[in-house]
Image (cartoon, rainbow, N blue to C red; front, side, top):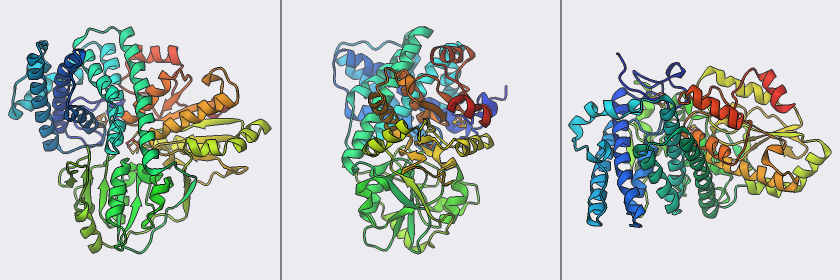
Amino acid sequence: MNEKMFCFQCQETAKGTGCTLKGVCGKEATTSAMMDMLLFSVRGLCIATSMLREKEIEIPEEVDRFVIDALFTTITNANFDEQTIQHKAEKGFRLRDSMIKEATKHGVKVPGFDETMYSGKSDDFYKKSVDVGVLREEREDIRSLKELIMYGLKGISAYLDHALNLGFKSRESCAFIQNTIAAITVKDLDMTQLIMLVLETGSYGFKSMELLDEANTKTFGYPEASYVNIGTMKRHAILVSGHDLKDLEMLLEQTKGIGIDVYTHGEMLPANAYPLFKKYPHLVGNYGNAWWRQKEEFEKFNGPILMTTNCIVPPPPKANYVKRMFTTNSAGYPGCKHIEADEKGWKDFSDLIRLAYICEPPEPIDEGTVTIGFAHHQIIKLGDEVLKAIKSGKIRKFVVMAGCDGRMKDREYYTEFAKAVPDDVVILTAGCAKYRYNKLNLGMIGDIPKVLDAGQCNDTYSLIMTALWLKQKLGADDINDLPVVFNIAWYEQKAVIVLLALLSLGIKNIHIGPTLPAFLSPNVRKVLVEKFNLGTINKVDDDIKEMLA
Ligand code: FSO
Ligand code: SF4
């Protein structure tokens, strides 16, 4: 066997079945091994904390934070820095041991599983990793459901991490994550029980998006319909990518009035719609497109780049921008400086600022504007107009095209689909999927833009709130009776939790593409198709007819 690793958590997995030599994302087999060890340590830690929670013993904040960070670290394209991941695994084992000690102190006996007993040191990690990866579970359907749950929990962790950075914490969600990891590790759950847990994970996914929406809107205000400049200015500049709005705020504070511009990139674009960010005149617009185009775009940007989360594309060996790339939070890349927060959460961005002064201003790659800011408050504000347009037949349907973009050619489907959407159908979008069509100027339906962009992938929450508002206003008994269809593009595990959240709300007939996840076994697929009518995509013309008839 030539296999050096196994990972099938994202849409671009090799041959549509699994990466076994190196990740299509660029993840090395040795890095994958460290991630397996990190998750192994997390499982042991969660077994201990779930037993302590059963006895109502408080779990330290540090442990909750660690689990969230560890899961986020293993999300596709978040962290490629093997050493950092190894250190996190070591910390996981230390925390596990301290929680087991705590349990013993309280007379609780933590059961002896490999996860709770392994005592190897880091020089044993590669060897051990062979036994603890995804394939340790031999039963295909059980593995499929357990991994589906794990990927959902990774997505939840990403959203909880951003909320936590803004001071919003859910102890209940932290307990759910840890108890669920313990349950799927030690309990012999059957398919029915695991499917119930999949749906429960989905409802926690909804709660995590809700919490993040609360954190973002309470801190930065309600997003407003806005035109965002996509051209460039003449001054030195810093580019901020990823999803973490707190980082953007700290950077804008530190670059106030010093002759430096700040641009958003990728999933940071929606920041431009928040009232608080509009107060910074040096936040001058958005540069570039979705994550996968960063090789060309970062080169052309010329200035420092801050990656606050995934998605990082490994820079080509000769790329000159590696020296200008910085990471923070759970993101990491070898050779890029990582910026840590101090104990109060404050980050010092002076290295980026110093570098910005000696870099050339960005080269233009676009001009004009894009329209953003249609989160639920803004749509509900437009309420009467939307309802009037529905009643008069100007709006016949809504198609939710949220999710992710990716580099595969078959994603051109989404551009072609958006172009073919009839003039009486509104596209509701969120996440980086929008970059496939947000610069096409698809026009207006009366005063309402045909593409309504709610924000980041987590802002799919807003789209759900919009659907629930429509349900109430149109007097529908069931969300599935609304003139709303779902054509979701997925790539990584945050899109998995978005999908599970929709399923947990009872939403049926969701199409996901460009392919169904490799981690769904044939039997699990069958259950999802039979129970939820989950479908994938076909030819644009056929899908337009089927979904928008
Ligand atoms: Fe995209 Fe990447 Fe937001 Fe994901 S930038 S793919 S679903 O991280 O999180 O939409
Ligand atoms: Fe492969 Fe995706 Fe895993 Fe990367 S994250 S190793 S591309 S399945």
